[in-house]
Image: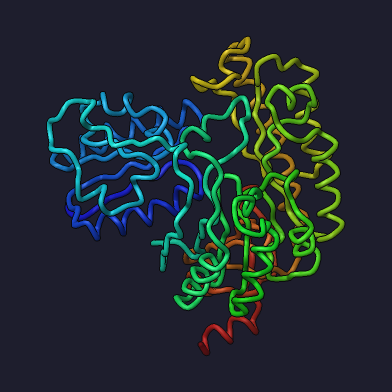
Length: 429
């Protein structure tokens, strides 16, 4: 191989940072290298990263393999001990060209492979200027990194450090550049995006940032949030949901569970009633909004009744998109020291959540049939509606927005036909 190849796991923030890594590595003159940007959310994510590293070595025997990301930050020695790995970089180091200029020599000891600093000592998040993201119709903009909360199941604060925000002016500048480069949709992303601004002068909120972006960049057609903690949603954000058509009607919520006792043991900051009330409120503010959520199955001490509360939360919050995690104990977290369930029970409960998720998603698809939708084309023949539902449609180049009539679905994607007036406009363009 030649050049720099990147393998990315995990969240949208990692996707964004992988593009920063590519540009920094290339500016440093790195060549014949594979960068593996890992995720630490679950043990399975770490296992998949190791598997990818071994495969990358088999396919690229002469390449330099550099491992970074959250799992590398929290388990540096684990990856350094792999004979396939040449260097381990921390989450802060991976974003700097100097880290790629000063890599250790081949064949050094496991200890010498590690270039990982104390992430808790990082106090600022520098704006990373990315003009495009390869192969994507929408662009991601990092506005925040790290997390000040300490949920008992989560290792991510130890991989990302404490919460820190990018100043509003730098964010607006980045969005302006992306729009000038042809992006019609921008996604605001962060580790705990709704904590945005608490460390900045004047303590601006995520909602204020979003409203500022839309006000300062009038040519931006779509603004979307990647994931939020509903308990931190501010009045500016609720106002956008209610009155700003360019703010996309889809929210992915970090709910995690539907039982109050489990939420307390998770050290979450909301109760079940808070989640239900928030979802009801945003549906009133924006009829047609779609809601997704993260849910964990099989948390320690979860009884069948407690699990039933998680299951019923899906209907009570009218969720349409689910991201289900079987509980995975992460070494160093309080939940890993709690009495654990048998893995078979955890998998069975996760399967029940997913089954329910498939049902509500099919209902969501069916409810959209015969509606008129605005669709961002991601690649030929495939796009997404404003509420983030995938749709098969002919017409439009990747990155363009067309209108279509939903004609049906196959339980996975909607099907649609482009409206003739839009097709004519696309052809004329």
